[in-house]
Length: 280
Length: 310
Image 1 (tube, rainbow over the protein chains, first blue to last red):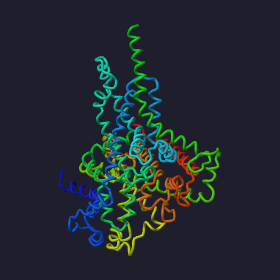
Image 2 (cartoon, rainbow over the protein chains, first blue to last red; image 1 turned 30 degrees about the vertical axis):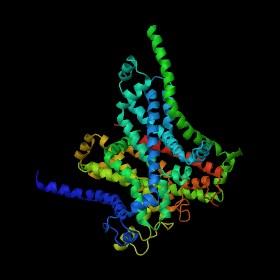
Image 3 (cartoon, each protein chain N blue to C red; image 1 turned 60 degrees about the horizontal axis):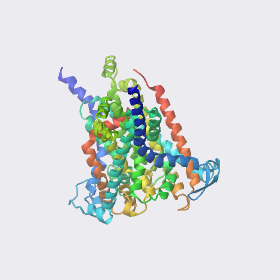
Image 4 (cartoon, rainbow over the protein chains, first blue to last red; image 1 turned 120 degrees about the vertical axis):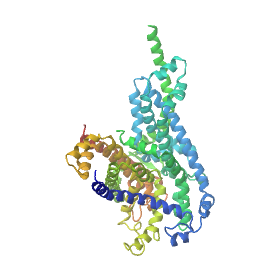
């Protein structure tokens, strides 16, 4: 092959590369501005728009963490996210096990009941949910948030677990049953370790959804002590309107856990989302 | 006989174990999702005093939705949600197809670009909204940049103008979720047999022709999934509006959506602050539930019919 066509083929690809790089810049530039602005004073943000900060000062982070009390919100978000992830995984795996591996006669109906919840617009039920939470004493409570988030995420988790468990060979649990293992042990010591990819898909997508949610804390949490990060951020944006450095720093703090998780798990997340597209 | 008894006793044990295993998940799901949702639909046919249901009212809550003063709010929000949906279909799912196709044609860099494009989608809409609110504010970096390259003069007020605010929010939402169509289309494209593309190439089809005549018909399931997701997401739109424009959908309700309106009716920010109208809120919720269910079914049927089997 001569060099001419190779070069012209590369040239033909240039517009495509340009388009891809432009969108990359559109994504990364705002995030870059966010990061460098965290280290600047508000005056410096106005004077020096795109450059690196004159001094890598952590004042904004310290102010956000202590004066605006974001540290407290951060801890609340961690508790709620961790609690919801664990509860969702345990109860969903338990439900998916008999639904995918026993012959009950009513597997399909029960699975259907769970699956119908994947797309239910639960926000529309928030009035009745509010009354229910008030009657149960779960307003202004992290436990209340954990229960609501788990309830919302259970349908998706049951769906994923059932799909992964269904294809495991039936000899697995039969052999264990012959050896006298109980059903609880079969599920948690034999089946669950075999569906680790399902566990990580459920954990990742539940963690992202719960960490980011804003709507339910907005209705159920009034006491500053129980506010989660997104709710606190929505207040900061108005409250510290003139202190841009502090708002930028609190945005950076609140996205840090997700950023770290994304850098570690980008491949699983990409494949998980792609697979969801082909789910139907 | 003995084995028969053993299998039937195993079956009985399994039935009992199944109930015990399913119960925790079912209880949480039924109590916090199914029950409140069913009660909300039911309650929309009743009169309300504050948070207390009083007497059966038939369709009168629904009738109130369509007359003064709530008709203007309802039609406004309905129109904004519809515009939002079509805006996302064009600017997110349309441009996303172009990005996915460009990545599919290249053997290098796909994973990197996909990861970058998808990153905003794992961020909270609150963070995305707050970030863009700062960037687009008067005196913000976007104003500075546009002034610098001469595209705009003076103070940038796109979020303060009722002509531009909704469009800006749709663009921010598309920026937030652009990675989703890219990932779903590329997964779909990779499932198409390479022989099909080779055959088309031999027949002399160019890249554009291959995308629209060969790939697109085979991407109907992916497009169907995206349309369904976009439909549900846009008609549930709340966070970005709340953070960027406030719960009233400022300026002058020009970015109001069905869920922000619902929130104001249910939790007291419509009209006088602190006054709620639960009956009206529940009727709006039921209406939105109907729109979402019928709309999703129509979208699914539309794409089922257009799915090409190979």
